[in-house]
Length: 330
Ligand SMILES: [Zn+2]
Ligand SMILES: [Zn+2]
Image (cartoon, rainbow, N blue to C red; front, side, top):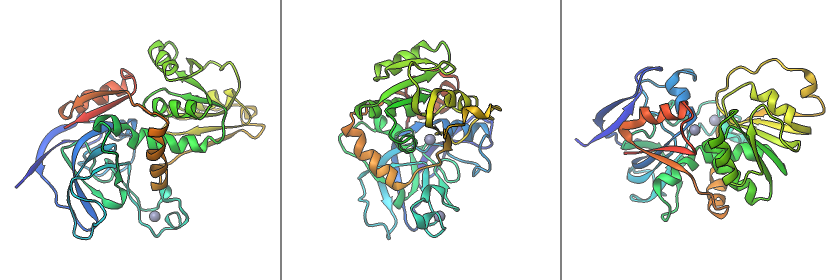
């Protein structure tokens, strides 16, 4: 029997363990993917640290999968064996709930999430629902593409939710912001990057990607913002961002988990300022963004780790030691 390698989480708070297990066979509607790269996302940290409820256990984390179709179920006809695909966080939806039926599959009542409620990509192989695999260009590098699958896609959804903001704030300059900043600059917007106070490296990185200003997250930018996106999982950034947006401005929370939002005076929200969150992605978001990213000249900055070093990659992300995104190579 063929075997695969995977970095497996047995229980939240534990280190991932490298194990060999049989390569699974695709069930109806599924494909087997031979993984060539998998990005490491902050949501993987939330799964591993136990911030998200009820993961499948044991679970193989990872939801920024790039690989090639190694096998497919008989009923899958549109993805050829050998073709290059990406698998995102949203791994499956029910197709029949009120959200699915109104083009809001990101809010599906019975979803499956890659690397959380179904096994993901910290492995040499993974099964995926064929409807949630996206064709990827042959020319690009596997590892460079991986961060687009979540940081890019959910970042793009957050960006769209921010609306037509000429002056845009990005709070937390990690994987998502480093992909979205060049897109915003390409569209003629002025990007303001907010990082931890004193994080000169992140601020220099943001300026190198076209930010007109970079500073501490509790500082006010040189001009009031039309909108802000918060990518860092820090609730205190919500009142900070409300302070930075102008009348009618919008604050978008782009993460799946955030520390509690501290109490703040109503005047920060007054004058039709808005706070909203972004959940997951739709396949339409993915099609749009994967087509737009090469036009906008998006170039990811990645740090490569061997699959067995998944725990080190997670620790580097947790401790803010990375610029851009971490990617595991099996
Ligand atoms: Zn549904
Ligand atoms: Zn993610």
